[in-house]
Length: 253
View (cartoon, rainbow, N blue to C red):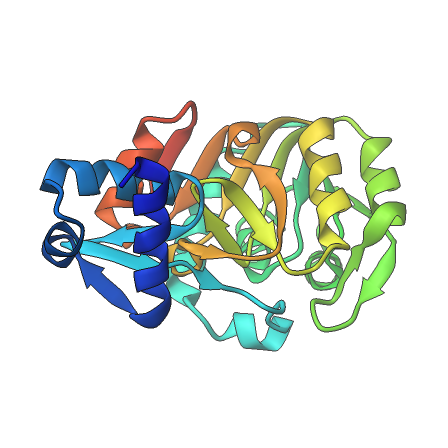
């Protein structure tokens, strides 16, 4: 069996099982552990599976974006730690972008007292938080088509606003991310995130590890366009090793 056929066979086996072990695969396919590990590594890089201790799982697929209220209740401590660390990276007198999401909202809690920034966001909750806390920094909302569940502006109108700006630090969020990059089930988010990549000198993904090894229909930002990832210390060890070999900085808080 040639490698491509073997990987297709592994994928077919995973469609029927939540988990399959390396031992089971070596017995089923009649090849060595090393061969299976190479296959699994390539399949994970291609966004097909997630490697876990002793074997592999199929990547979870995100079919729709969770609502703001759903996300607000999840991983609050991790988001606060990520937001606190990210806030400490922001130098004086710069322009930052905060992507729509509750991790961006957590970051706001650590910068609202600053008056030296220009803060751009497509998130209505982010802008509302900063206004209600009397933030003296300059604020820009991108506008755009209103995504009601996510409480944000999306689509080409929002992207045009971002494209007209020069941003020092672009903080990107994600409901799903993996070794290929940031994915989304919402096509309206794609031009917004791509505009942030083009307009920002540094692109920083702020996202807790519960979103890792999930995928969705649209690849919004390839991993090669991300300079830094800030996540929590629950990121799986194999994910840590794979990201450590990429041209980016991985920070776990």
